[in-house]
Image 1 (cartoon, one colour):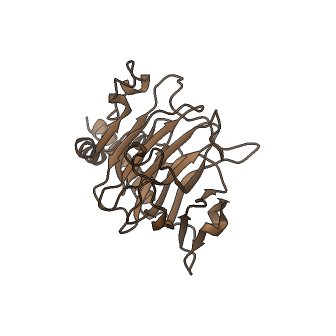
Image 2 (cartoon, rainbow, N blue to C red; image 1 turned 60 degrees about the vertical axis):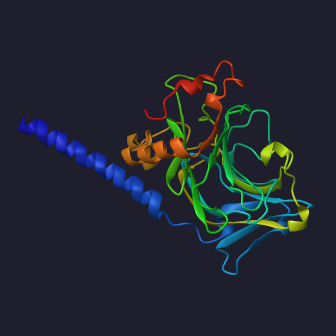
Image 3 (cartoon, rainbow, N blue to C red; image 1 turned 90 degrees about the horizontal axis):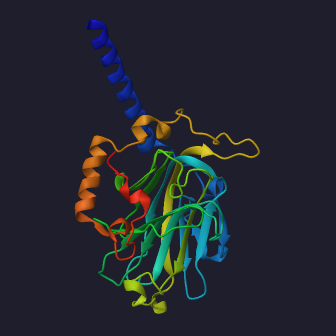
Length: 300
């Protein structure tokens, strides 16, 4: 009995150490010091600027064009996080996107993990739309309200991606959980490495009230700002990438990161009760037969 109790105690201590390592990495990872360390501009360099110390990055949109950047490296699995402050005032029609994708363009076989921040008229709340693509197929949208004004200060938006689940976080609160199945499938993106991108662009044909509210160009330029990029992931390196198969060497690929923790489940339940605006898994008019991943529980 004493031996069993000792083994159980040792196992409990190990689990706690894993959890603490994960929490420490999530909370205290040091961002790199400059934009150039991590990113390159994709288009419209004249719509990009930095603060004097290089720690804050600004993207702007006007009636001519928007702007975007991407990481210099690809990753397969990990923890990806950035602080954003969104366009203030009347931002109807403006979309700020923060996402991961396997390629620069909207290719027909791309994998993609999306945060999209949908602008609105002054006084109306921003909505967050998340979406997931595998092999070019998306249509897995969810929309959420926020519990704060994302234009007044910086807030942290993060993605946890491993072979078991994809979790979208806002200020470390899980707002969406997308689970993998224990069989080969066509809905969970886990084979291809991805870049991380952000961009600002005009989408007034759909972004605000389904396109009814158009962008007021008299309010341009529209500016979103970024800082404190952190990544703790498996960097893809050709021709022999280390990320071909998953391992349990990193906290984000260990058992504790395969499921929500007890506290995360409490936060996620609160989000589900109060903030969900749209969930494709509940849209039986759009999907008379729901996609197969809708049967997977985010609580497991």
